[in-house]
Amino acid sequence: SLLQASTSASISDASILSTEHRRSCPSPWVTLEQYRLLVSVQGRLHSCTQCDYVTKDKSNMKKHLGKHTGDRPFSCGDCGASFPLKHHLNYHIRTHTGERPFSCGLCSASFAVKHNLNNHMRTHTGERPFPCDHCSASFSRKQDLARHRWYCVANKKL
Image 1: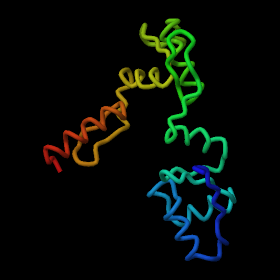
Image 2: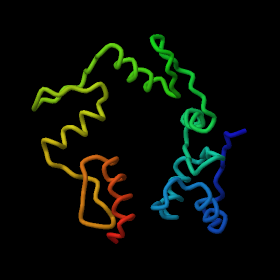
Image 3: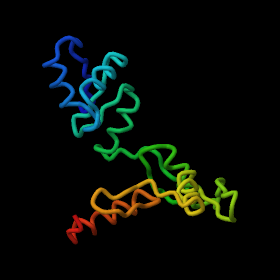
Image 4: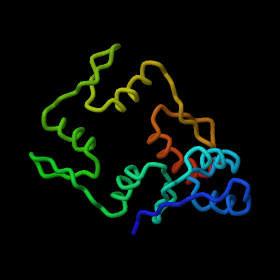
């Protein structure tokens, strides 16, 4: 089964906990001490057997596994497009209805998805929260940083 529950070792057993931390920690930036706290608070973690994803919530793990199985149970009645999560279908339906419920208070722009409004607001504020690790450039959108990193590293701007 792709779904695997992982019960932590005793907090006092540092060697086992350290191994557990390296095996299932979702982030390389989480320290062993932070992981100990996470495990002591949560008690039981569900680890994906296909990647490094870890969650305390079994239903989140089932949703995550759809990425690996290709399960797309939510289908559009208009065009047949299918999606792994219901909210993805709901966003898609707005392409058919033209609904754009998220409006900018500073200009006439409107968006079907709130995340896109949040990105748009940075054009007004000038916020650029995504800095390049290799040079002084920064970006308002994560995908722009990702594209830049490829260019920056490929051209050895290190």
